[in-house]
Length: 372
Image (cartoon, rainbow, N blue to C red; front, side):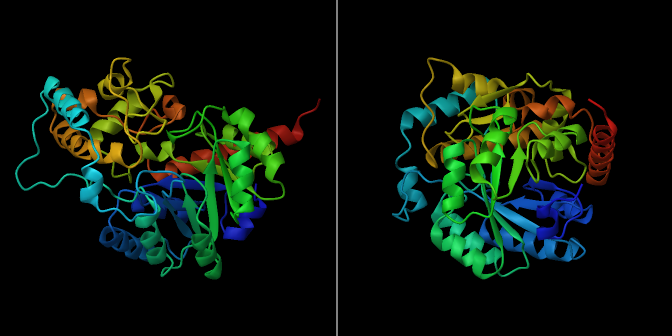
């Protein structure tokens, strides 16, 4: 079961878990995988608090972080202010969002309650400081979710002995990652939650493995059980990159309404939509995605403007859905992959890991004893 990547990171199982929840990341690492905390939604102060907590709660096990450094976005290289970017958002788009919320009777946020920070870390200018902060801790991996990591970031991580990973949905981008010094290529099929391409995991994985060999490859997209991990290993990968499965874990800090919607969803209840960030991402299909994806709707804005446009709306949906507001619940969505059809109950991270590992071991044993 152990692969070369397991040995490189000092982990027991070839399971790499992407999650924005520090508690989930810590639980996965303690259970023998490698927890990777997504940082795009955190300010530097929040991130420091989470890294402090993680360092104290992984029982000495390895962990990493995931950031977003797109190759292309509005304002790249100019270090734009939030105010200057806000000024680029058309009033027509603002009106569309407000009208959509009003159609579903979603009120304004209560006075004194802050919305999500509009810009967050959807840029090199914001993600760079996050990485520099993380390198002050004993992290083992930095992953870029969008595009090739900049050379100075690669150098800074390697200088600290930290490995760099990067997601890709194409062979060409995978090769570019390796040329730029990436240590671990993460091949993400269209089944995946969040940003993804349009090639399936089954097709993409062996293509990427062959194209970047001997660089190690992780597989993401539609991975949610031990048999699928075995399939990833059979295709030449050295492990899996799992994100969606942890959304319905007990440790996840997800809105309970979101968790209920995910548990009830089938594998056909997701859609590849630009309604969250402006770039194609697989999310749960709701009234929000349907409104943005309608033919007569305004086009979503480019990064990071679309996320800035919708940040306050997302806060309103989450706040009122949690209070039982039907309209907010109808709109509320979440990044999630097609594996959502197997996510039928809320379990602890340890239970999920135990099931994954048990089925993986059984599958490998069955394959090893089979005859042609």
